[in-house]
Image (tube, rainbow, N blue to C red; front, side, top):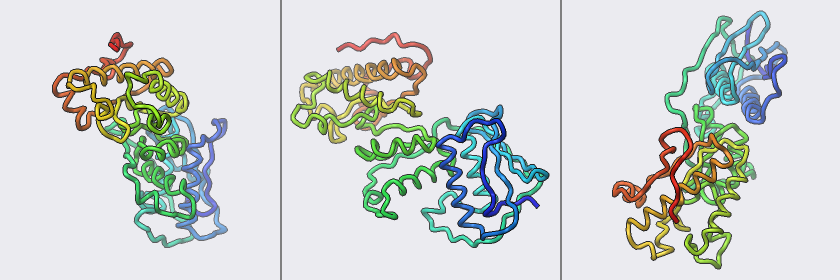
Length: 323
């Protein structure tokens, strides 16, 4: 009989590359799921074998191989393997995606039978980037879960992956720069709060004695942007472009010389284009976005905001910033 139990394990197939850090997180979570749902047993458990295959990114195929006591997961990338692992947990072990947050009660048993003819191929996600923003996370910050601040954030990201998500804005302000590495290590794309374009440190925190005016301190702002780009090298990033004040408010509250919609729109257009070029100088295929929130939407609707044309089309930009 093909079954999952405490003796089951996840491994890469013969000749496959070493298991990545992101897949290791999912494999460890699967081991936890087995401990939650299975009793100790002397019975052999099916081995979950991960194999590279020609599938579109993030898709996976499950195939039972009863004679070899194996359950194969075929995928072409880490997220495909991760989603496949959590599919087994959900559909065979009965572990719900929100088990952690809903305090799911588990009734442990010796093993969970796997149909010997089991075959399943996932569908391509209809939306390219799917996720959530951990925003105004006061309650999460004050929750002392097992005396480990990172563990509760790990469970946030794990739940997102269980539900088929692939991106997150990992908190606001200092949290975002603390937990973006964890989110990235777990296989997620990361993006940024609109008050922290490119994930850069707040100007007012780094330079508390300087007026946060980009006209006066353009080089300092640019330095913060470049530091953020360099720091996130190697991560999967959806780069958020823009410019806001130092307390999540309009930048012209800090610099009243921008007293017309035209001036405000021109500066914001220049900043977005400059950040766009900085990102693509390091990563030509980078994915960028901007946030049309509040006062920025008003500028956009009035025709005062000009976005780089390559935010909507492919190819090198021919736009130039007019400082």
